Image (cartoon, rainbow, N blue to C red; front, side, top):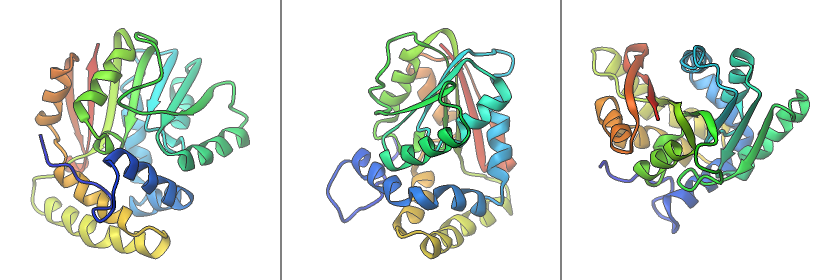
Length: 243
């Protein structure tokens, strides 16, 4: 397993506690910086990930590490499920999500709650599908988190994970590394009160298993028919698995 990278190396607390603090700190600028730093491409990647569930037509979806809810809102528009439940460890991010839910009058279709990805507050076999967008690399224990996602899925249910990966081809690899290691922290420092959060991003991606290594973890916790679909020359990957 890759080494554990934490947001604040000089402070006490588990990775889980530090990640919650980090997202609480950046919650007010998170959406703006997400779209700004990705040049809006993150919206296209999210749609591609959600389209993995189109044939399945899930009625009840769990969105783990839901953050401010952007992935879930997109899933509502594309898939039209009966309901999406979002769970996150950051109350600050959930407060933003709740404001957006109220503004769009979607309380009957989308609800959020505080929760731990490694000990999800739901019964076994409760959901038709589980999604995670840019959240699994923040899990304190990846295997435990994926195992719990498997637990709350119905038999035959699908998990879809969207996460950053590491491109290998020249010159994408070099450009990606430069942007992530130098440009991203600089922009984050300029607009966010927590510059460390945007240094943690490239560090967490660099230390995280991707491609066949991530698929191997999904296989190990019981997922079947696992697949990895690289996007944008391997900058991002969509992982899918069936319970």
